[in-house]
Image 1: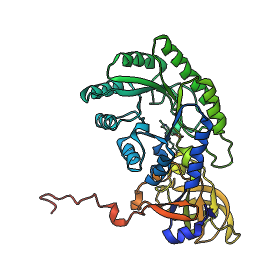
Image 2: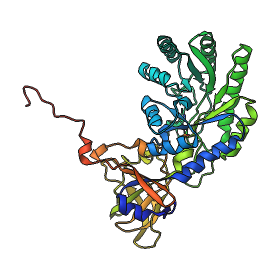
Image 3: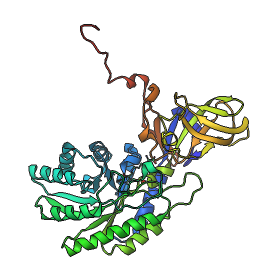
Image 4: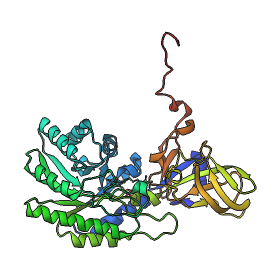
Length: 408
Ligand code: LLP
């Protein structure tokens, strides 16, 4: 197996196991696909930083001229450190704090995606305090079923995100009267890993109805933000054709600028997580391959029951053939990366967990006092560490032993 032109076995020998490996050209290709789909229609691609926030990933996208969707000041600071422009950033999320609003305004972000009436008031009051005009877009919850995993579905009224159309209308009217708010857009994001365009088009129709209603109130928006959520192929599921989807959006929106917030579809298939088989353990009913990667490194299978392909880095027929569960060293039954995979395995084999570039490393933790793994970027023949493997010492560098009169 190769990452671009570099042998994955060589990368494992050089950087150790387990390891996240990313492909620069795949990231660029994925981004470019969005860019080309818009043709000459006014648009801004705001990569959803949460999917993979490594500075190297952000830097590659910043160099392409990408915008970013951030949900915290930490993400905004990352974007800036990686060379991205705050003026191309949208700030989403249900719980923006006063400090983060102020900082984002000082940086001159493109727009806030406002998620509640209370947040709109807070943004206005901060804008008054620091004497600026805050650009805002209201996140509308279109109440459509994205038919994805319930934990990553966001566009139903039962979800905490956005506001219903009635509330949105009243917020727009209020914001439009404020000297300190600049009403510029409407936003929605209905969920993630969506593999059918139907819910997206339904959400778009509802958003456009609201935009028409706003026109009758003499409120004219300059952009519509269609969120992210485009699914990738983890197994062999068919997913959305990006060009077709974007073109059908463009056909419906007249001359409104379109913003889009893809995360997974930019980085998902640009990354793999490679792990080594430490032990094989078979009992009467089950075959376990115990690997050195775990749920703390790649949480998706444990959290959502997600499927990722597991492929041997060296494709050979050596070892024991069985239906293997790939399980990690963490003391939880949910600690698996794959189940019932028909593989020939022997100890020492490297297995690549595929399509691990999105929501992989970013969801990792130090559970069981496991240092987080390294990340490597590959571009053609070259490769480099883009995040060092954590050390054992680094795990407790911020901790101290409690001392008082009874415990010196
Ligand atoms: N915009 C907003 C406001 C979002 O909340 C998200 C993702 C995105 C854009 C990007 O969505 P994408 O294009 O990546 O689907 N940890 C889960 C996914 C959580 C998605 C959270 N929001 C997973 O591993 O499947």
